[in-house]
Length: 103
Image 1 (cartoon, helix red, strand yellow):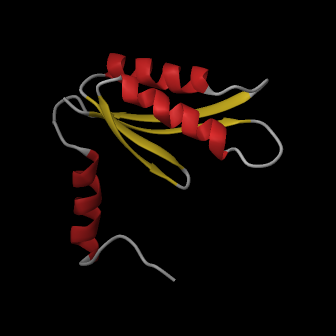
Image 2: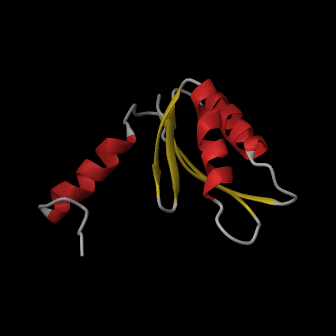
């Protein structure tokens, strides 16, 4: 089984959050997950929900701020083992092109 999630962890501070977000992303390296960071969050893939939640907890804890905002969306498709890339490929098949456009 593959559990896919979209995670956004951010300190509630003035100015750039990138250094603290980098700490959250780096914390994921201690877990058996794969991930890809994009401008709006990080997509994480794990074999099971327990591993995913442990990684998310560590990412949240890694941010050093008085207030931390964390948003998590989990897709736990329990009957199919499909990575996140297959979700994108399925959309691209319907589009007949890549699901991206550069300006």
